[in-house]
Image 1: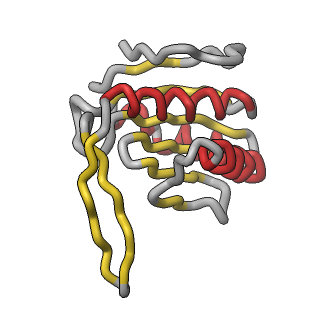
Image 2: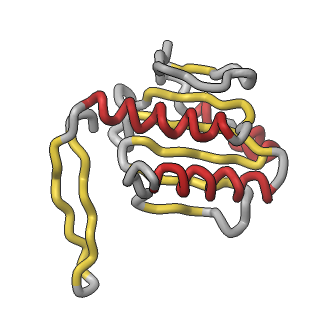
Length: 149
C-alpha cells in the first residue's frame, strides 16, 4: 500500500472509492503520530509491525494493551480525538463499545488496542511473526522515528 491511499465516500448508499497518491513518508508519519499519541496516555506493551512486505492489508500494525475495558475505550477515544486535530480520521472503528479489542482503521495504519488478557489469548504478533517489529519501551515519552527490525 505504500504510495497510495483510498478515499471512501458513500453517496446514495453506494460506496465510492478514489485512489489518491501519497508519499510513503506520510504513512510513516501517520504511524508515528499514532504511536506518540498512545504513549501520551500510557498505552502498555506498545509494538509496531511493518506488515507491508507480508500483507496487502496495511503498511503498519500498531498494537497496544490496556489494563481495563475503560482504559481500552479511553485510549481509542483519545487517539481519534488527537488525530482528528491533524485532519486524520479512521475509515472504520470496531469493538469500541465493548472495550475488549478495538481496531481503528487508518487505511495504511491499523491500530489494535487490546484488553491485556485478550491480547495474550489472541497472540496477534505471532500471526505476523515474519513482519519487521519494533517494541517500544513503556518509559518512552516521545519517538522521533520508527525503525522496525
